[in-house]
Length: 280
Ligand code: NAD
Image 1 (cartoon, rainbow, N blue to C red):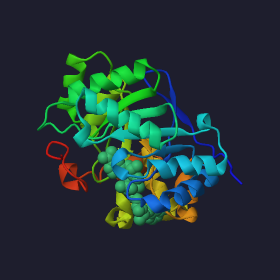
Image 2: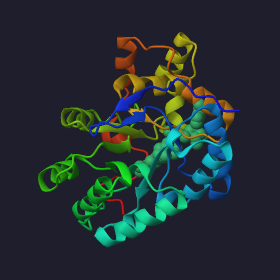
Image 3: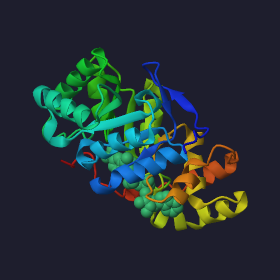
Image 4: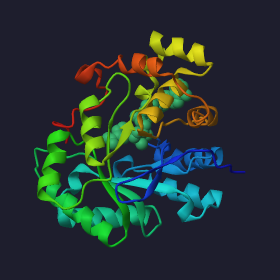
């Protein structure tokens, strides 16, 4: 049996709505994806974040069918990977993703990484603009773009990305990038929102606040994101944690507690994943 959780939506700059919290499937093995996404949909998630590079788009499609949900009830994001930059490659990659997802549109299509060494992300973005005009990508955005990459799109193309999906958690709070994106109408999506479940969740500030609010450290961090206005999609294979991670809309962190979490920021030193300037 499925239940829809009380997850608010945010309005993107193209006037479309996105559920603020979803389920991410990075590192979910292809053979286990159908089961994991089925579990998440049953728990009440209605926003799935996948990517061509995760090799599990087909499992996402099978789960939606297995649960018996209509395509329109689930917000699906997928991403174009690094070896598919350029107009023709992007067209092929997008068609393949749609095929694997067994759908004729995605809710959000992202450039996964800018790969500045190849310098083709502007051309790739123009291909995404076409997919958007055709209605096959309801919204388009980018991932792992820094200020310079966003500014370049701003000056050389017509469409402002609806989102930028970047590594973001209390140890890498992305203050400057978030401010820029707020000023330019670009929604911020936070990947590895709970710091991949390691180290960060043992931080005494977070365990202390977890006690104070009678919540788990993961819930405190996710609530911090929600109050900052970030879009999140924590990953878990376990129904219990899936329930815990989506159950963050019935309490509120006080202003000074928000600030205490934000003060954990370690800048670039807090990065857990690759540096977007060099990756790919
Ligand atoms: P995450 O911060 O969501 O952490 C996931 C890990 O935390 C799990 O594997 C589990 O070990 C642990 N965990 C989950 N719930 C927990 C809980 N309640 N308490 C304690 N531990 C818990 O990290 P992630 O998977 O790297 O990121 C989430 C999603 O972001 C991905 O699945 C993917 O969709 C997206 N992502 C995007 C990019 C990108 O380049 N665009 C990169 C990485 C991840």
